[in-house]
Image (cartoon, rainbow, N blue to C red; front, side, top):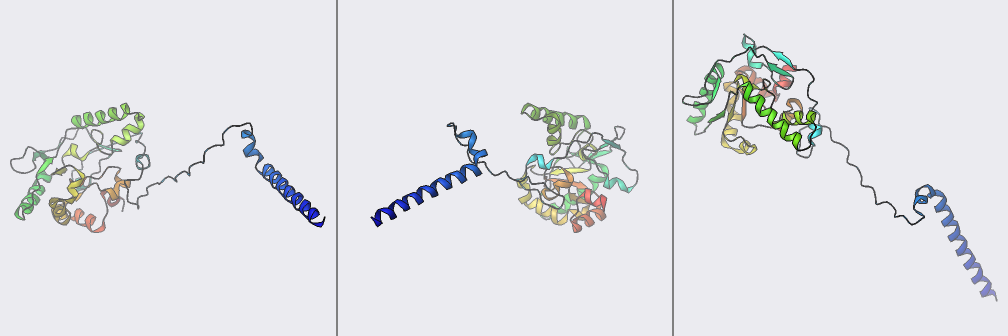
Length: 268
């Protein structure tokens, strides 16, 4: 008899505990489970949302950083700049927000003797010296691109924008994305002939003997590597290890030693 009583008490205790637990659970989570008590499927587990990475001027831009995080809005206004008549021409800044005056006509000559590539005559003289010095050490710095007219620059930029729009980008985004590789007409240093592209225009150029030589010696002749991945937050242009800009020997030395890009150097 005693065993039967104990058994009954245990059964009642178990049933009571189960009832209490179910009541507590339903009360606590009723708002969540109520919509699904009629047989609807419970929602799948929500994926954790990644925190957006915002590149700052002190951070290197990585391949994982999204395009939208890298591009700044296209300037609503573009400032027209004149080519200085004194030595400050060496530091002229052309970018999405600064355009060379339509009135400026550069004095162009061959980048090196016998080349069809043309540069500003003052830049060409410095480049020829650098070309000769590299050649004496068995390094080929053949120029593959130099001066580009504003009209051709505009055509290339517009074509890139239309390609991106056709791929689904808004026109504003297309303009910003396009300018990371092709600046608008008049906004590129190519339009005044003070920068030169050397050798293969591909990222792998950074691993070449020519690029290593340039990084070690170009400053002596007044040239800097204009666009690097580490400085994209400042330049808003993709890395171009083949693209070298003339700024004059003194400026090039200071910029190379300090690690500053042109935008930083002008703001120092």
